[in-house]
Length: 387
Ligand SMILES: [Zn+2]
Image (cartoon, rainbow, N blue to C red; front, side):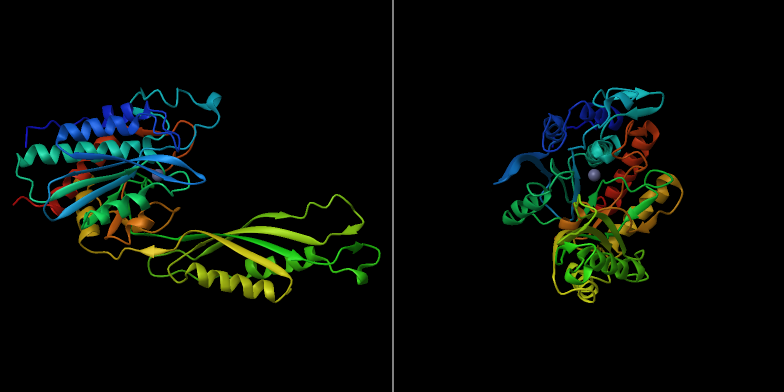
């Protein structure tokens, strides 16, 4: 192994931000990362996955070493759109540093963490002087903020076909609350969106006995759902939460009982439920008010818990060593690609503060970027101890 030089996480984060990689556009971000990892001695493979009806997506797999333990860093270089450009105080794709903060789209979600991964791996490889007692890989997608069809899931399949089985995986999603890296995410709630249509019989509002008002039935069914909690939480999870996101009738007439009414619900459910169980729970509540309905689900992910163990111990110890405090083990927030990785190996998420993720003037301090790099590096030394 040739001598390597670890990249600077702040400078690399800025270079990544300058690549306008709004999903599904690669924007040059994987090129930058590939060049850096290639320079560190990683074998890099670019993989473009396709599926009819969805945009093609570029992904990157990189690995160094062949032995165990095999630790994977997983993340994404795609970002959400900047939104209202006039509201930004800097060019969202300029990679600006303002005072001690890097400001730009994706710095916390999650180009800063990807840069910290590469910097930590570089430092680790520098220190082991050609004797890597295990292996490190990168699983980086350009399709996390989008439909997540041509991204991590297919990258994991591709790896499995080649016998690439990480022993543990760290995902760099922004998990920090009060400060960067103060929370290690060990699981996620599931997410299910249900479209509900209730059918009735159209009629004159003056003669309701000749009609059957689907709006009343829909409202009563929704009332049953929002009045009764799904559960009261579990050991590692908050209570499941149901939100009605829209109710649509589209009836322009004040004197016509409509023939149908629809609503959409989003349910974030904990490890006490599967999506199938949630659908049964919903169906029973609608059924109590009407038999004339359709209920169709779109499942973004099942809930999961990666049980605390060697990986979470190492991450907790690394955070403690760098920040002087023990991180919380949490399961809050939205879905991430960890939901695919959990089927392959233990996975935990650890990253920057999420307060400005997806917002205007997304920002992280240079101290946070450097501390996260130290934490990932410290975790590597615990997970792949010197031979
Ligand atoms: Zn993300």
